[in-house]
Length: 182
Length: 266
Image (cartoon, each protein chain N blue to C red):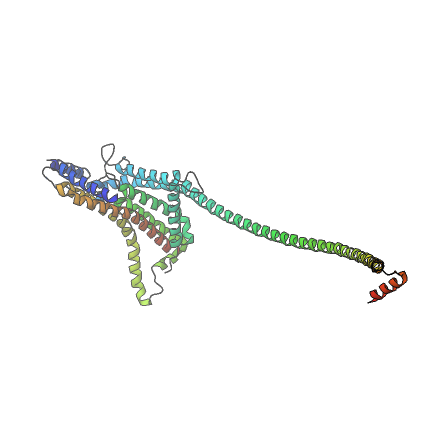
């Protein structure tokens, strides 16, 4: 039943647009209508595209390209600046190092001069002291010899006296001198 | 997850086939009814009547507007998805025109872009169920192909004068063969708009008719209606591909013909 009504409707539709059973594409009575509206649609799309869309998209693409190019150029420039800065840094570093070495050498030389002076002075003082000391030692040695003679004479006199003799001062002194000569 | 979804969908199709199968299956298939042109206001289809053709052409214009104008309205350096698609389409067709038709073909870019956007949108809109496919009608594609044919012929003669006829005179062939080749070239030149238009309308119409035939089987097979429904799914996927490819083919052939007009030497 349903299919019968559908068939009837189908038949009616076919009858309505006349010829070409089964192929609405070949129903020439609708061509005018289709072509008319197609022309309007195509003109509308052409206007939309050529007046608004395509120039805008072209501008956006160009702008993007420009931005990318600019960014790349800026990056290149920054890189060059960085290299320059590094060079300047290295140069400054080298200069500073040379300066430091120079100052160090100067200071070392100055110190060396002071040191030499001080050493010479100290050597002088030391030799003076040594001479003084040698002199003092000589005096003390001489003093000590005299003392030995006196002590030996006294001791000899005391011994002679203790042994019951009569101590002759001159003989004792000669004997001590003989003994000391050894 | 995808597998589970597939089995649930399969079960749904079988169950719905059981429940909704017609009591007595009738093979009522009218695959061509979808192409009927009908007035939306009732009455005859006169030239200026508002028909389903008007509606779907208008929707195609609206879609082009939405994608190309609204989509690119923010003019962003980093594009949104819509702007990205608009830019890709622009780049795709621009490069095609430049590569195929040459540098001097670029001034025809807006015309070719118009053709591509219209055919693409009309094809995709036609894939919406219950819609009307304007590019399935030979009246529409014949006008599109005719526009290309006349534009190319006129541009050819304006640019090259009588030299455009050199397109038919194959100077690299032996002299004796040239008249025969000229006749063949001439015939092929005039067959171009025919093949150009029928290729598009035929592909679109055939695909849609096949979908309708399978849909009719689905109504008639009852329990086994899931078989044609799977077939419809597969054919639909193919049709999505065809919708794009036919727009692409139409456009690239336009570029090829334009190249012939701009540089007629072989």
